[in-house]
Length: 154
Image (cartoon, rainbow, N blue to C red; front, top):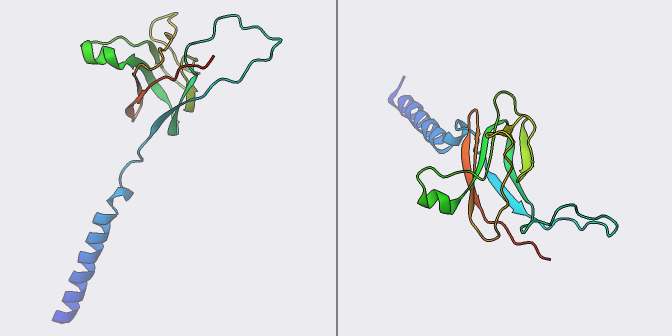
């Protein structure tokens, strides 16, 4: 091969390596995004009475960009995280074997295949305006998301 051919081959390899470097996210794992939203509940019909008092905050829905088989889920007040070495969760669910893949769930509601870490425990009521952090774990993902509950309008 001539010097010109070797130069062209080297240039092609260099451009190929540069292209792979620029597109290296092809080989990266997908990122999973966690989001939360708070919406006012639908009004109840006038003929139905509520058995328990209305909560102080709007219901909160959490979601992921992909379906996840969760192994652990907990919500902890940020003030506890900042002041305590071992903060206590106000809602903690675990899965021993098979949890159903979920894309969305609501705070305080049970998830299929998961149970409270402490038998009989239920989710604490959220305080409006307080900061909380959601921790989620699955087989190959760990993530966290901060949220602030919105006060319910009466």
